[in-house]
Image 1: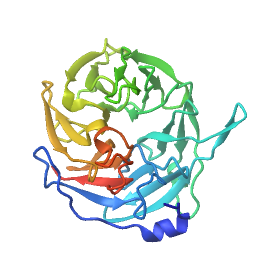
Image 2 (image 1 turned 180 degrees about the vertical axis):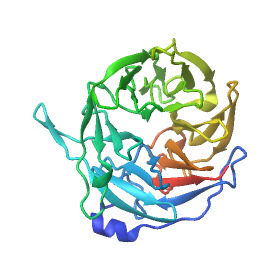
Image 3 (image 1 turned 45 degrees about the horizontal axis):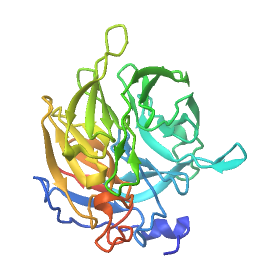
Image 4 (image 1 turned 60 degrees about the horizontal axis):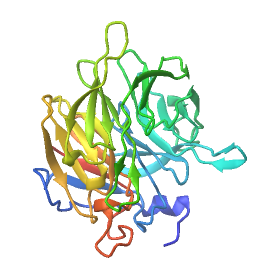
Length: 335
């Protein structure tokens, strides 16, 4: 399928209805909010993470165009509000590949860029569909920058993916400092060839101020308590389960339950405070969950970004590349 230009894409955006899901109590509680690439499921748009501003509008980065997209759930038509320019690194053109996204208290948007080993910032005033803002470097030295989250003091935490490192940077930005380490682990995937080694992925704080980390490789969740001196405790693995295989983005709802997008399984899973893991919803490659990669709550409603990687449960029966699904999209969850 051919990629379309930006103008045509905006005018073609479609909103889809509910789809049936195979497993868990969430069968009738998940629907597609917006299909980001309605004419194609060949990954001409790739979104990995999602966040929301104080008005409840959703933001995500498109790795193909470099655009930062905004979607108002009340009228879900995507618009570009910022743009990440490629860089010349060692003589090669390198895209920013936007990963984790989050807002600080001032309303500035922050974007993790693994290829740049940085976190970028777009000032609130520059998030403008008429003149999309240009992100500036906020934090450097964050190898494999993946998930990001702010604490109540305005410090930014950054997960390092395969390295297992968790970095911290103060409100003023600068060089990222090592905060904690998740032990390395490599899992062989069922094809017998590929390996999964990402042990530090999604990040979230609970109400007590403890930091939680999604471990994609193990299918696990880690907890890092933070002392009054700001130092990290030794990471404690609070849950590990086959249901968490591919644990990616994580978020707490208002009731204090942790929600996990299990990308390899096309599933949404919950973890209770005592470490009990339960499947909320799961489906095949037809969606609505298609390699779900991140989740954010706006009030009691959750929103999930579909990364749509053609792997594991997101490969259709004929072994092509999940062409039977909706592709890049945002899913709405009403628990």
